[in-house]
Length: 170
Image (cartoon, one colour):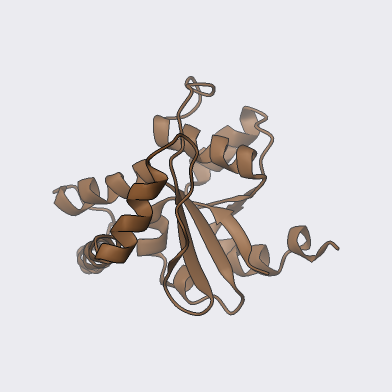
């Protein structure tokens, strides 16, 4: 059975280990975070501090965009956009890794604490009863501070999250 996490598309692009998990993993990604990839691709703002790392990440973002634009993947994504909270069929990366796009709806429920994409991630995690996977420590602290009832893992704890106790319960 796949471990499932709610995350942003840019996390999948930036952190290569997310696509090479030793165990089956499925990422649930709000559609608006896919759109954010285009912003990152076109932006002159660096994503990373090191210029070489920034170029590498921008190439990965472009490659992920190209993958999502392949006809079969595009068809899966378009189907998910027909209804609020609809999910795409899995988009496969390899035998262990897939991604599902969800047409999340920002209800502004957490608008004073989080931006719209963060809100969609939180609402998706709550709706699907899945943990969030992120590299944004500030956001993790705001989730805790706001007492949002979701599990959240830092990307650095990915291996623990995949093998963690949350997934080993019968």
